[in-house]
Length: 283
Length: 283
Image (cartoon, one colour):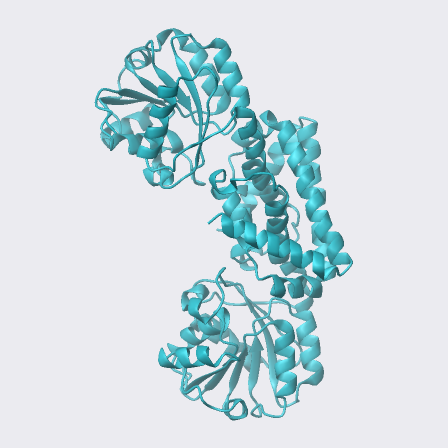
């Protein structure tokens, strides 16, 4: 992908923003800049040649960038765009990486200048360790990526973003509506996180848990080591979908419990086999 | 560990039995034999020099072995020991690898000859792929191992088994009662499996799930690709403990749901932070 005519600014040089920077560096954009409240991180990224000169003014970078990648928390993303609305270069594309889309897209499209374009995105990539120090372009390798276009998005803008996503190593992105995205994410991401939290919290009598668990427990609870502040924001913003899917899941687990109580082997085997087949389809 | 005077027979050359064979081979026992209903597997293991001559009679191997490792399903383990009770060498030690202990230990000690000794064991090791073809001694590397001794076990027998477990790469085993083991396993193994089954079964409307999930969903459902027949046996045998812990888990998840409904940030943050801390202690 030829980015030699493109200036790109990444806002937020944490795990995802930093990984974006490392991946984009390899594609040789004209300039690759970053904005972060932590000046030491910016300096480190510049010294590692991951980004270009780190001493530029925010207003300058925004006014010279063709593409801005917002890699902040949802509320901070909206605040940054609102505060800097006057500075974006005319015709530039802004995309984000937030794990929820309906709220952010509605609010940004309400305030966005008509000569700018916002494309909502959600890379299904990450790891437990946060910050630029853990940034690694390999997190995008073969990762799923969801895009949530609106009627405001031009066909060629979407194609450009899709090509960029594939160029950094992800699978071809899936395009869905923001509302569908948030409903699905309640199931595939928010529910597994809440389950992990409840699973690890629900029995506190084992004093030496570390010596008593195998891989299944570790896998099932891996995401319980979450960033509490971010997750509070995500769950609250997606409240209705999350409550619906918790109810579905509990109903299903209670069905299993009743089958166990009633020695209903047929029902249990059916559930186990269906789960096993569905899980194999994910690989 | 010096096993040069020891004949060892492994009964069941599947994933765990085969991995035991590969690990024990490196410790150079006098003879390492195996019993399996699949003669082709035995031949393959002999050709790979994992076990010694595979054409011996079961009665001969049992009458010459100092240690017998039972690597079958629970019911098959009991049946094999009962059927072959007359053939075991006097003074030999029998150990098993079953994921539940109270039932098997009670039933075996009821029928065991007084010149034999049974030590219940549970390696917290495995992977999703079954069979000798996937056997790999590295599954024991740093794995937890639970032993459930009874009053019938001699101190020197337990020390021998403990040393053997450490010699194949596991951590020093934890000694607990069979009842405590089964209660803990309901929490650390059976509950995560049932959760994975319900999680993957509870929403069947997504047609393209594979393209919509990230690592958290894959991790949380990894064990859903389970061996249905084995798991039916495990869950049914541990019925009371499993039902108790499902109730605890659902109560905890419902607490989270209520906190989400009520925008109780304080309670949610508390749960997230407690889960995060507990999870970090497992690493």
